[in-house]
Amino acid sequence: MNAPAKIEKLTPKDFASDQEVRWCPGCGDYAILKGVQKTLADIGTPPERVVFISGIGCSSRFPYYMSTYGFHTIHGRAPAFATGAKIANPDLDIWLITGDGDGLSIGGNHLLHVLRRNVNVQILLFNNEIYGLTKGQYSPTSRVGTRSPSTPQGSVDRPLSPVQFALGANASFVARSVDTQQKHMPEVLKRAHAHKGASFVEIFQNCIVYNDAVFADFTEKALVDDNQLHLEHGQPMIFGKERNKGIRLVPGRFELEVVTIGEDGVTEADLLVHDETNRVLAGLLADMPRPDFPVAIGVLYCEPVPAYTDAVREQIEQVRAKAGPADFNALLRGGSTWTISG
Image (cartoon, one colour):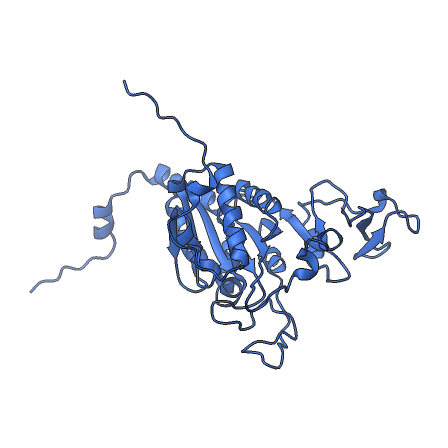
């Protein structure tokens, strides 16, 4: 009798390919790659059941560096490939990698539909507010005034918020993290993986060549405590080095404000408690303007609703149960047919 094989615990190295990682030195993508590999090792899904699907851009080189299955597809169309792969094989663990240009410009329509359909895939959008691969043109998330080769006098476009886009597309899971936060990011990614449906995670990523330090005001180590609000479901919204700042609703108005605990009679009981099932609250948190407000990090919204893939498979099984085994030969000869003679 053969002895059962011992299953070793997976490590991040089990998900690292033998390909040379070719991003610019100091690029935030290296940190995201490290965080994703750690996440997969913690989750424990065998590499042969994992697929990474990407479009075009710096982030889209990701599949080459993962020792899993992968598709490097065409610009903006990764959601379509991911949808097809998940429907064809629901047991696959599919991760969709995109950037703010690939996902929100040419791919905006495709991203919208994979979210609204709630296809059971994990979507990681690397946001560096610039086009990196094509040498620094402004992107849909670039701020007004951004100078680039395509906007030499400064961008006049109003920028798009990735998480607001996802919420508007009726996404069932929306979260944020930062490339350098190696403890926070894997935990968010594990939450995204556990969610049954389309999980959307915006990752703030630094492009050291074309948009360096664009997020420095809330990602620099010395500034994190005062400029990031780490969300926890069921917990009051507190932040600051002294843990004495918080977010509450303006009395009598449906808008947020920053307050200091201990001033003007404000206590912790006055602060908002995060409810990740509240889509309206998620929208308010996503829209907090810098620098007057901190940046909301973590799970903004999570709604357990049926996944598209499950509904499709269930419908197929219902039809099979009612109609019986399919007869391809009968299908070809059914309905209107013509006999062509010489």
